[in-house]
Image 1 (spheres, helix red, strand yellow):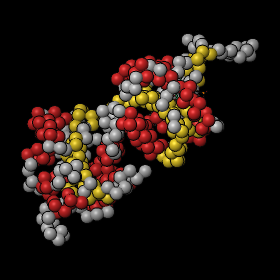
Image 2: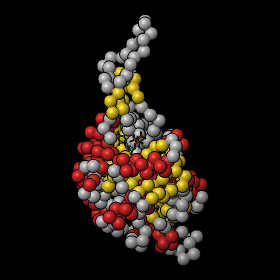
Image 3: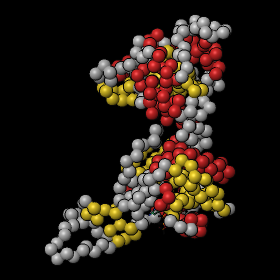
Image 4: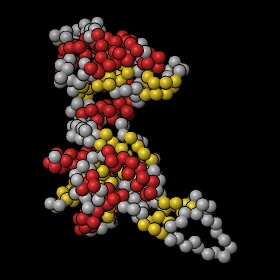
Length: 406
Ligand code: CTP
């Protein structure tokens, strides 16, 4: 997906071993549709060459405020006026200190100071040794830079190039890309807490066998990501899936429908939107055997009896908070046929204001989908698209409904 199409990013590199990750970051930005202008400090040039960054960005790297190629010899002005955002990655402790004090002795710090702060956001991806990161001077400078309007993207934790382990690694390129994409999304759900269920559930028959279904969880994870991008606090209750957690999302892993219900009930009192995308098992074996059920010589097959799982969506939709309008509930319907009629009937049965229908077999495991939004007024179709794009459209639609209600 070209999530950064039309965006012009100034990618600033300062001195740090994490410069090697910025080559990959540059590639990812370009692949996402951005144009990238790389600016490097003298320190950065000690770690990676401008040749690499020029080849990846397809543009000459700007290294000095005295760059005579600029007709007006004002690279710091020209660069910052063209940009949709400046991303400093890696941002060294020294560079944070420069920003905090408004120093402007090299091209990159000069450009940061000269940029129109209201129009060109500055995003910072720090990278340094854990002691440098934890030092009060660095933390003081970070707080000052944030107070001056910069967006701090945080640091990773783990092994450091110096051999120590702790906080201060630069975030991985794919994490920075996700953060930058999220930064540009409209914050239509700021102040909301979105609770999402996703994936299948697994109902045990015995310790090694169980009943599950073909839901991949991709639609629910995309919705959690889109809600987070829209500025919401997000809790994602996930059945057994192997998907990575979207950035900034609080994930609770569960297995059975009963586990999912319990996890949902934990968060429901503070949630303002509940989106039930999970393919919750309708039934579970009445008795899960504590030991593996063995074949016996007679060839008799086991007989399973089932009990119905509690309907999580219907339970929440009937709760006093949902009834009073404090919790907006959205259901999903995975159907195999007669989508519109089944979705309309299911909306009424579940008692939710909005139900999203999709054809299960046509979407399970895929990266794309098509949705039908069913409410009291009728039906709106969201045409086939990537699940992330549909998730953003759905989030915009829910945000619109919430604003209209308030
Ligand atoms: N759902 C739920 N808890 C359940 C069953 C379903 O929260 N125990 C939610 C799903 O997450 C989804 C919606 O209810 O948002 C529809 O689920 P679905 O299984 O498609 O509908 P059912 O009510 O089970 O109807 P049927 O199986 O007859 O299609």
